[in-house]
Image 1 (cartoon, rainbow, N blue to C red):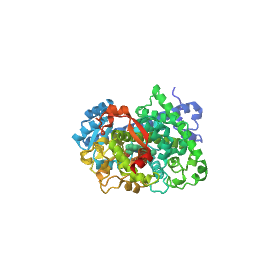
Image 2: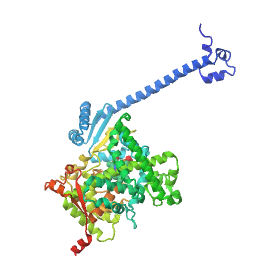
Image 3: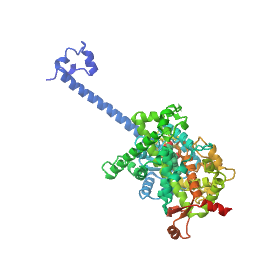
Image 4: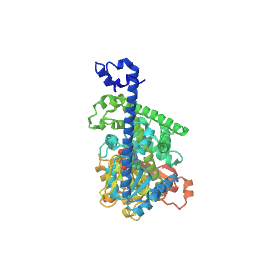
Length: 581
Ligand code: HEM
């Protein structure tokens, strides 16, 4: 028997409530009981929800398909090999850990300065080799690859630097630049950049060993320089510093591997170990942040509250003692630490990120320069002359002195040119298509890469000796490197060449909207470290290495010598001065 109440049950809860006041449903539904009403109501709501869900899903799917069709349409207009061939070719090279640069070089030779590759049915990669197009692309493409963000987020947790979206990192970048420039304090009478001197004094016991392994020594130096810059003097007395260094390196080594999984592989013991290391790293970072704040607690309470703020940038970083303030951006240190948990979490994440990136990149460059010094005694002598010529005139060594050591700065830049931090500079534009002046349109979401070895060793730009180590190329007539560095106080970039094409092709620190924030800090800091080292120590290869190498050393090919043993022998400056007289 059909239920007499079926037709009388209101469609919606609102309808039922309205009808409860004496509407047309009023006589029938109370008679059927609340259960029938609720059952019917649940059925209809479920149906409605399923319909809404289905429509939303179809909408998302259609949008995805439309975006994919657009990607294929725009992508196929760019020059490049047929889809399937390219995809398998690049994948095979990557899987075999082969020469990606060599592979891209062949493609550029065939298809021109812009080459597109399909690395999957929904993934387009565009490689760019032309300096002017690169410059335009690096300014317009403001985002990083999502994988880049994943690597840092996995290792550091929540953070406001290094992540994919430019919008989210913009203000952090600005405050970090203010802070790092303050650390350098170029041109100030009382230069604040005493970090290197302090580092060398404190790590004396490391230096005085019989011999040093170049990689660990460079890493230790970079760790101390960046740590001291971020946390202040307290970093030197921190008993957990050695454990922290070891943890950072372990996390840095594994981060790319684990971030490459689309779904975190919780079932793998290696992954669980890695997560445990990241958690320990964060605990230690919080401990050193707390120590740094405690050391400056008087400051925190008195001055940090009164830091002038404007548009999210700390305007008075002199009153704010450590990098923590710069990173907090818009909050003074005191407020941020006392504030909601999330901001403390983010400060910690940013600092772990800076330590991971700053140490690995700077250590690479220091190691590279030291290796060249022991392989190339003439370079060492020339540098020593450059350093002594400036130091003889002044009592101590200030950052302004280093700015006058042009050959040294040129050596650091030339080493960075020949040894970029990675083979590919990577960008993307997540939301908008990129329309380049050459009337090429690169669809949103495409992976944009610059093969750094090809660009920085391009014979047509750098000359026939593009692959050779030749610091003098940075000392062309009319270019005063030191002046240029000093004149750019407050800005991030360093203009090295009058010739624009060369500037655009010097990219070890990237360029454009996401360029390295630590570029000037790294170049000047590393130059100062080498100046102090060469001034006080004789850098020599270990005798076993000299025998092994014999006379057949190719100073341009450092791959054969990834981690040489070196000896640092203290110079007898008094004796040297007497000999000179
Ligand atoms: C020799 C040392 C270094 C090298 C070779 C280096 C290289 C790079 C490169 C290639 C990028 C990406 C740039 C781009 O996509 O255009 C980058 C980003 C960055 N670097 Fe460095 N870096 C060095 C040292 C440092 C130091 C010492 C710091 C700070 C303490 C630092 C802070 C950053 C930050 C915050 C970013 C991210 C910028 C963003 O995502 O917007 N770097 N670096």
